[in-house]
Length: 597
Image (cartoon, rainbow, N blue to C red; front, top):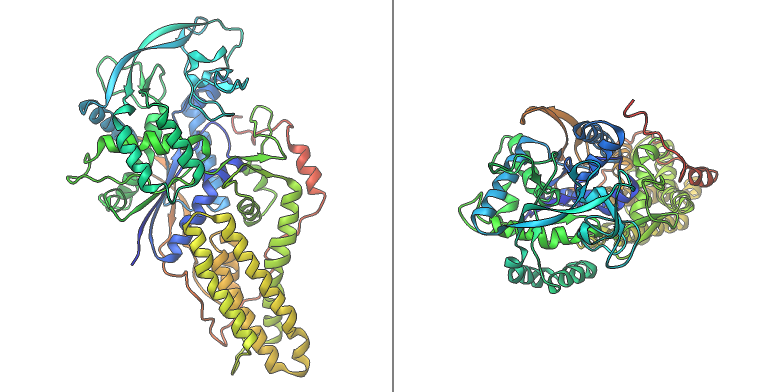
């Protein structure tokens, strides 16, 4: 029986291009997970979108001298194209500046207020006398008062991960002008009373901690044990979702409060767009559904404490019965560093996805990132590692197995799968080993142990190469063509199975192998970018049609005599010179393809 699986993916701030840290932290793990569950036959809804309202957008707009909407629109368009090229298979990738999102966010604010989960409080904030305005937290930097990291932001420390109060930073300064004199002034705001949810949140953690990653459980429990305090959910800013109260026209909902709602609002938008307006409830009001939040570790408290609290506070708003679904799992990844150093946009210490997609195959990028996922600790994207894994593993083990045997079969067996009468014990054992991979690898993917799942699949690829070296059909075809046919048929069966097993990780080359083996149609369906006018203004969305994917995660039965297609090499061999060439790009000035020219 199929399950309802909701894949909620962190919403990137649309203030700059995506980089490999984004890919490793949330987007590629989510895509692999979603592709597997679609093949398994489960009902998958994978949603995300651009976070249009965070102060990083306003900061970038001020820096460039343009409006926040121009910044958000430009980068949202680039997000769509970049993720399509790398193969992230959203059912809907939207953004937070839609009429749908505004309306639902305001409804949630109003309901929480009516139910007594919000309270008013006068807040001390940093005020810029030069700019004559309160400075949102991302406009402020200073020394962290917890770990004493020198470059902490006004809302969170990237070093220790703690949420911060900008006024408590040591030596706070304006990002716009470090010489600007900042003073503390008071402003009235609404707060979410998290303390009212402490008991429910502890029960929630008790229920799920056995299948959560230890770092997520530990961080969440420590967060609650330190005492839940109210957090402001409105702010003094002119870009964002308006506060739905008279007299609050100059203030907006705090981005952390409304952005996490995007998992729900995007689900509702998807349902409207597909002309089945209540379909989203299969995931959000279904006790058997499982909702997974794929995020980076810096977002843990927002998804294990704050978002569940918001959901508990609005339970029943869209359904007569209670029981809105909370996240089943929050598989937060650690950080992926670059050549041993932390990502830094200001120093251009980053590997930007639009750039490397111009130089390397998407499956080569996907393979290396998946093989080095920071699932339990920080990992490192190193160019020598990329070179070695792509050439020494992806190409030498899998690409070589596929290319040499499909080419051999196409040339020596008249372009068809060999027709045989029997198989040797060794042939049967190798086929059985490839069939067992569906259960082994699938179980690991379901536990979100994706790096181990890929390692397991590749170990079977190496076993297949060893089997082939023992059978040597390129030699036996001279003296015993029937035995060579048996070996070739067996290895084609193995390739067929392993291609499906690897397909969530390597969708582009998997489709090619699928076609080389003589199959028609799409393994996963199709992605496309479209514009529709469901909102006040039309907006582009990334939509994935997975209708052809369901039920394919099972052992294959390659028909004897099936016509093959002439194969081509799956992967491009990398030149060792790329290592130093790519390292030279790090820290160098980058022109973002004249995006704002």
